[in-house]
Image (cartoon, rainbow, N blue to C red):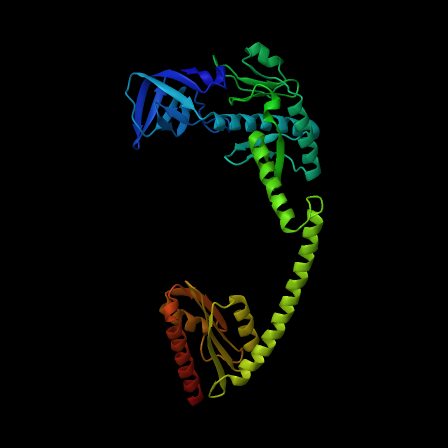
Length: 405
């Protein structure tokens, strides 16, 4: 198998001979005599593209053979025209070389080493064996971008065993007859790697760390390189420009304007909560005054159309803080109904949990709670009235029965 992607990672088209075709789960795994398609390995995703017009969705290597997965079966023995999606390939090359550079800088500056690497569709992550703080990452990012701009050549070496021993590498197990592929970035980094990379560091364009988090006993760093980093900058610039126009300010004063508006919003929300609490107190007193009684127990049955479930819960809690009160509330929305049942601590003739689990079946719902408080929801909001009526009649029967004991 001739691996053209190692000979020239910039080659996009080639013609090859079909050696073998395996059928697996209604897909065809094609073996060629040569290929530009990089198989998934070393943390780098595989190439995609076309073989005689058929889409190549996955490429992998097994037993030193590279297989190309397609949905259309090719003729078994004939030449095929192939092409790879170079935009995707080049993006992966940029991310992978950027990883080498950033990992090398972190190792050089903080004696911390990369123990994990994942090249994703949207971003790339490396896992470091130490906890590193934000300022240290910024220092490493700055140094990494300087290396990018230094336009250092990237070399690929296949050293002999004797040459390998002279290189400053961690111990590498070498199998008999096996060649070790080494990627060398000037005096910056030298590591065994089976991935493919741009030929110079300048092609990485930019390395931008976008997230830092503690991961296990070390640090996970998420970053962007090349076209991804440039696209991210463009989208963020456009977002800042739109926000600046909406707030009638410029980008230099945007943060201070957002801080000012955030303060005003927090103040308004605090005032709103205070007013809602005052309204709730007034509403509770009004509801208690007008509540119908069964014997000496006030039973409040009410349905709120498109109501605020949290506010309804607040009302119910305040109502049952008074003695001998039972609340049977329903909250109806467009596609859902909620039940909220509560009672005062001095009432023990009926469990709110048992009552709700019984009544909620009428709205095809589920829920639960305690003897004093229970709630749940269901999809059938057309039966909400019937559900509350059923609960009310059960409460009424229990109250009447308890007074006759």
